[in-house]
Each structure stands twice: as C-alpha cells, then as structure tokens.
Length: 473
Ligand code: NBP
Image (tube, rainbow, N blue to C red; front, side):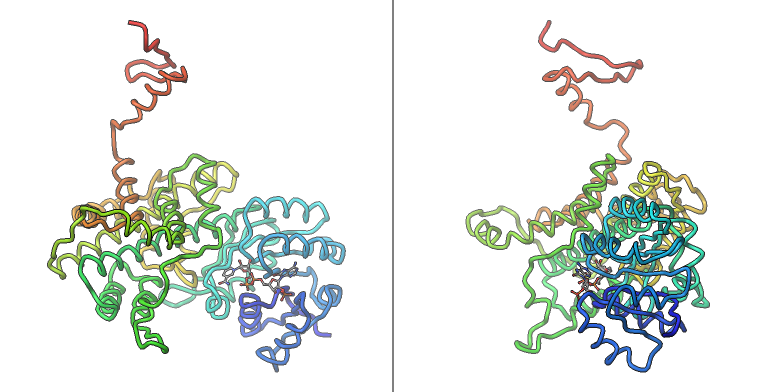
C-alpha cells in the first residue's frame, strides 16, 4: 500500500472535496468513512485514477500513513468527533496528529486537545471556510492547536488553501494560535457572515418594499455595487440569485423561496460567547434574532392581519435612494466587523491566544464566504495600530463612516417610518452612536439598581462606590 501524506475521515461534501483538492496538489490521500459503501462509491467515482487510497477500517487507514501520521476528521461536528478521537488514539503513535476540520465549538476543541495530548499525540482544530466549492478549489483555513503540529501540516494546508495577492501566491491559511483559537476565529468568521447576509437581505428588502424594484433591476444594482467598495463574494452571489428563474413557475427564484431562515448554530455560539465575555456585538446578535423571527411565519401572517399600522410609504427618487441604501449597507457592514474584531480582542486576552488581528483579516481575503475587498483595509488598520480598541477609530474607517453617515441615518429612518423591519441596520447605527457617546443613559440604570437593590454606583466627581437612601428626605 502506498504511503499516504494524510488520512481523511468523512466523505460527505466537505471531506470528498478536500481530498480531491489535496490530491490535485500532488499529495497522496488515504480515506475512510463510517459507512463503507461511501468509500467504494468515491473510489470508483470521483477518485478513480487518482492518488487516493480507500480504506474500510481505521487500523488500515492509520497503517497507510507516513510518519508522523496526520488524520483529519471531516465528520459532523459534535459527538462524532469525540467517537472518532476515542477510536483513533489507541491506533496512533507518539507525536502523530489528529486534525478536526469541522465546525466544532472552540471549548470542545480545547478539551479534545488536552485529551489527545495526554496520549502523547498532537491536535489541530481548524476552521475551513468556503463551502463545498471552497473545499475543492481552495478554502480559507484557520488552524489552531498544538503549536509543534503546525510545521508538519503547513506546506499541505497552504498548498490547498485559497491564494490572493497580485501574483496569486499569498495563502489564505496561517497559524492562528493555541488550542481553540482556530475554531474560535472560524466561529467569528461565521458570525460576521450572519451579519453581512442579514444586511444584504435588508438592503434587498428596502429596495423591494420602498423602491418597488424587480429582481432583475436588483441584480443589476448588486452587480454594479460589486465593482466598488462593497466588492465581495456575498454581493456577487446576491446578484446571481436575483437572475435565477424557477424552472417550474418561470418566476424569479427569490420570489418563490419562503422567507424562513435556518441556521446551524455558529451565530448563536458567538452571541452566547459575547454575552459570557461581556462584549457588545448587537448587529451579529440581531442577525441571529432576525433568522429566529423569520421562522415565526404563521404568527407573522396572523399579526399582519390583526395589527394595523400607521406606517406609510413615500415615493423616492430611485437613483438617489439606491445610493442611500448602498451607504447604509457599507457603514453597517463596517460595524459588523468592528464588533467581530472587538470580540476577538477580548477573547484573545481571556483565552491567552495572542491573536494577530491583521493577519486574521488576510485569512479571509480569499476562499471563504466573507471574502471582500475591504479586508485589506482591516489588515492595514491593525498594522498601523495593533492595539486598536475598535476598528471604527482607524483613519480609513473613520473617513468611510463619516462620508456614509448621513445616508446611513436616512435609510434607517425612512425604513422605520415606512414600517419596514431593518434590525441589523438599526442595531449597527445604534452601536455606532452608543460607542461614541460621552454621557449616556446608564446613570439612570445605576440609580434604579441602587434604589431597588442597593447595588451601589460610582460618581462622576470622586472615586469609590456609593449608595443613596433614596426614600429618606
Ligand atoms: P456533515 O456535517 O453532513 O457530516 C457527514 C459526515 O459525518 C459523513 O461522513 C458521516 O458518515 C460522518 N459521521 C456522522 Br454524521 N456521524 C458519525 C460518527 N458518529 N462517526 C463517524 N462519522 C460520522 O458533512 P459536511 O457537510 O461535509 O461537513 C463536515 C464538517 O465540515 C462539519 O463539521 C461541518 O460543520 C463542517 N463544514 C461544512 C461546510 C459545508 O458547507 N457543508 C462548510 C464548512 C465547514 P456517514 O457517511 O457514515 O454518515
């Protein structure tokens, strides 16, 4: 049997495509899948004639690998990963490496690394982004774990990752940090993706409801926007989505799809983690909540009949209002990144990861779902000020926000007046306004807390904690 460079476990869409990607870069890959028929189907199908070795049991898979052995799991996140680790550890030898390439929760990765290392092995938990096409052609890869494992996989991972730069030679794959750092960064990527998608959905909603635009007209707008500062994968696919026609009805596909959004949990994980760490990420949380409220379809339909609203739609100059929506989208998108990076900053300290924020932005320039032109600017912002508290303070984003601000406000105000729900837009501008407010309203919260619970407060004129007997005269 040939000595394979790596073993992959899990031949669903991601696993198969990653295997083909690795093989296409000159690596020999051994594969295993719990259901053995899938190994046969793969070997006789897409893997035929390639340097791919099918195996039907884990001992054979492990036996076919070069030392130190590298086994990568591409199985469903959760207990499947634990089961595979349990079965693999007795078969591996000192310094061999188990890699989890699924969407595992970062604290699970931390626990698994501790367990795997207790067996004398090494562990990598890596984010892999880009869906099935990315896995095949070049994903963004965000590895973290046992530091000494990185040099062992670096060449392979960087070879299969997406490339960017004028010579297309900068890999979208770099070591992120120890233990759960890779999976954490992938989780934040997904959370920003939630906000980005919701903001695009709200832009579409405003175009449809306020401007009465057709899918084809909106396709043209998004295609045009993709040539400017909004240039990104999600804007590009949005333009394509508007052009697709339903084969059965001949109608635009977007008009056929029910407005109930699903989710796989990474937005929820990020929201929960932000609450645990006390970091405000309102636009990301709103994007998750917007999916939840979308699922209340029958209640929404009933409420639309039961509740009459005084909201009124006006007529707008379409060209001018499209610029207004554009600016609202761009400014709100910046807020989503400000929040994502603010959370990364606190998490890096909390978990002792020493994350390099600019380098993370570069990982997302290609291959992944949030790939976008303006990630370069995020890199530059952190290069100029590595300890930047919030991205909105960097000169580039400060200028961008100030030029968009007026239109951003108009878009949200007009949508609210017209009764069009734009939760992510609204939370983004509220974050912007809250973050730059000197004297806010929390003094009232503190007064109330002290009134009913003697929770104490701080004063503006001297240090210390104070309590007032509110009912005494
Ligand atoms: P799925 O997440 O659908 O998982 C299917 C694979 O897991 C199959 O190979 C299946 O084997 C295996 N599996 C299951 Br289910 N339970 C198992 C168990 N107890 N023991 C061993 N194997 C088990 O596959 P996917 O969509 O290719 O995703 C793989 C990973 O990559 C996931 O963690 C996912 O979240 C992540 N990811 C997916 C995408 C995407 O776009 N799909 C993008 C980025 C990351 P079987 O054939 O025997 O059932």
